[in-house]
Image (cartoon, rainbow, N blue to C red):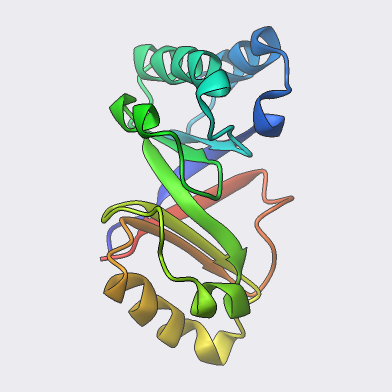
Length: 154
């Protein structure tokens, strides 16, 4: 397990949020003592790629060590050219156990919530088996975290 990054959360509303608002929020987070940005509810299709690419470039220019995109599902292959980590799964523990891993690549992020504390070691073993690059496992829900810690799965 790698050391967690303190990460600021920005909701992209699946690409429906105005780009100017997103870029302003990236800039705002730069004034805080955090290591990276978690771009939540990111679009996964080609139509949303341009705005996401701009947000990622600005984050990198401002010095963020980690930029994570969370569409929570597989992305258009061109997203893989961005300088960002991608979460290709977001869902509850029961769904994660049934998920085939389709559309995910080794190193992608997997966000699993609703994991009872006694089952969290099993969740981490499954994340490692699926070669998740980063993981967020919680008994609660991902939303309403504000600032979250994302840890590497291996």
